[in-house]
Image (tube, rainbow, N blue to C red):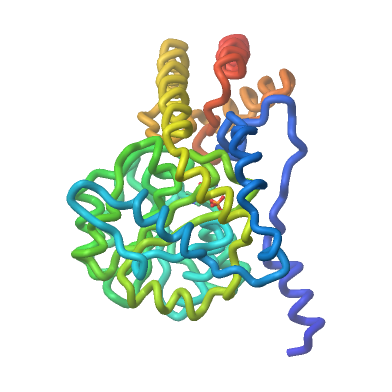
Length: 345
Ligand code: PMP
């Protein structure tokens, strides 16, 4: 096949990532509504060592890795450095994992994070889709299908719905022996993690990101936690200096000041619950999202109508096949969202 044919095939078959024009209230990417604190930006720039900028800096650096170990560790579990690696956003880690396991059977359970399929498509990797039954994993269909030749990508809390899967569902998946990539991008908003279970389960990997709770989406910092052999393989396949010096500095300083972000997470959770209650009192079918966004189940026609009404007021949310996903904004933005929704139903 010629290079021209490859270019043509990609142009035809691979969806281009579309970034949208930002409306005044942009709630479509589940970003943190609070800017990274200016005082910490100053600290980041002060801590940058000018003699290092021209050099290739380890990724992760010793300092960053140490902070990650402390952040992950709990009263009953101490994480180890060899259980952790980093990526240029959790997205890059997903991409590299797909590359590593491209010859295995990849499974996703829609509605799920759209990038699993988008990246697989870009890499020419086939994805098996087993839709959720309501908000539960379809264990009946999956029974007998999953084994150690399979890799499952599962966000917990789920995206776009925001709900948490039951512990039994996660254990059921782990017991199939399939490799479970548990994507905890929204962990800080749910408070629920399975990270310590990597000691027990060789077939578990946890993904996290600094894009949400730590207001650092621009810096593209994600991390993976799993048994050392998986991490070692991941490190051999990923690019050597995949995470920038500046990005690592931002993330390190964020972890050293985690109380600031925990307080903001608390506020976002409070607003999430206020939004859920307000939408429910309008008679909308709102689920129990544990992430930094809310999800409203709507029929297709109504999804379109409400989406357009919001857009008219300068509010962009995410349209899905099953309804609307709306990131929790700052309180005044949420007020406007509630008011506009009330007027559009
Ligand atoms: N996983 C999930 C479930 C997400 O929603 C997102 C961000 N939208 C990511 C991963 C990617 O995060 P990052 O910004 O670290 O690439």
